[in-house]
Length: 108
Length: 108
Image 1: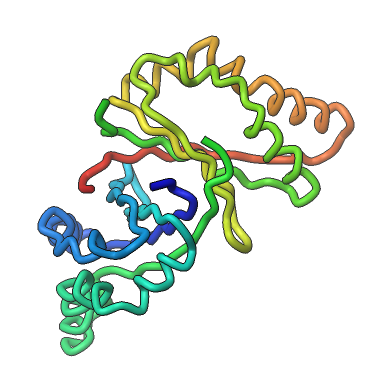
Image 2 (image 1 turned 90 degrees about the vertical axis):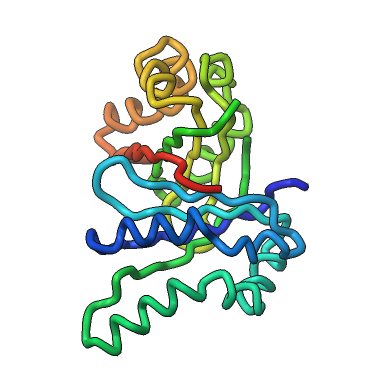
């Protein structure tokens, strides 16, 4: 399947949460893998300072959008969302914040 | 070949230069493709505002570093470097600026 559409989730992770964050991905639910139009994904750890990047490849923008409003999206983010909720309950800052940006593949 | 190491060149491109920038990549020299340890690359165009991303995958950090100091690096960037030089000669701002960031692939 051709990689036409790329979504990157830029994750700012607090230092104390990095080990847990990496564990979440090494034991991830693989819920996203079941989505139609999903091609593959990679978790990138910066050398030095900076955000982690979750890079996912899709056959189309529509396939990506369908995923973000699917039960698989909730399932795949369950433990991370729970960690953020627990921090809030305890009056702490969120252990991570994230923002999606999307791209078209224009050349290989 | 396994993708272990990722380099992303974040390119800020002036609006008037975007068409030329995209043309440079659609007609690129493919000099990088000859480098040992090079796996593949993608040019990502942001949906909306933001930087272009040149994402290259390598078998190791060493392979990436070898490339950045190789004749192939100069050859592959020749036309872009020339455009920057021409702008400077004319007393104009550079049409694009770039910064490399590197990553380890920690999960798929």
